[in-house]
Length: 255
Ligand code: ADP
Ligand code: MG
Ligand code: MG
Image (tube, rainbow, N blue to C red; front, side, top):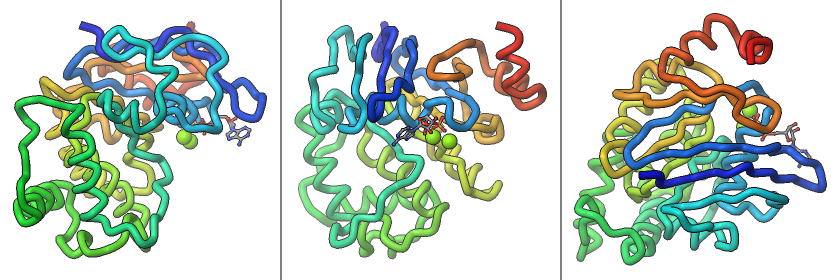
């Protein structure tokens, strides 16, 4: 059954149209990749899905489980199960990483139910859960006592975004270039963490320039080519390799 549906979505920023008719459907548990050149509007799509105030939807619709979420604020969309891992995560000084994760997890727990959501009664129980997840994304326990993303390196910020996804257990995650700025080993561990999270209950959409991270995923159901504000071609996992070998111009000339 369709879980997330983007229907002929148009969106602008500062009066400039950036999304020009995006169509996409995802079903529970699928892994999708959106690949496209710089400036094509991939991050704009991610922000628009999560209701970033700078982006205005001018037409089209976004539906979760058949219901429009266009009128919902970012936190309300999170409660519908959406999660965005940012391309450029912000440093939030004064907000403890571990406190942030616990507050967010508890905030979502009433709205998101499922067998995989445990109830953590004590802080200690939750810390144990966090540590298991930290290990999975390759971050040391000491990160828990730091402020959210403050002073994290580029790679650590990316791992922090994937950690948030792993911990919060959203139903649909959009990860905006989780591989940018990572070396090969880090790409592999981030991909592994993504694979762990994606599964029968969790849908993941990975936005990326490169097929590299996709090769490390346990499964990849659909690959979409994003160009000039819309998806111009969709296919299976092999499309990612084709793009890697032939570039985006090849697709543009062949649609
Ligand atoms: P991508 O993530 O695919 O690299 P973006 O969504 O970041 O693309 O950007 C899409 C387009 O929107 C680009 O042409 C970019 O220059 C433009 N854009 C981004 N931010 C702004 C802004 N603040 N004002 C006007 N145009 C913007
Ligand atoms: Mg970019
Ligand atoms: Mg981007």
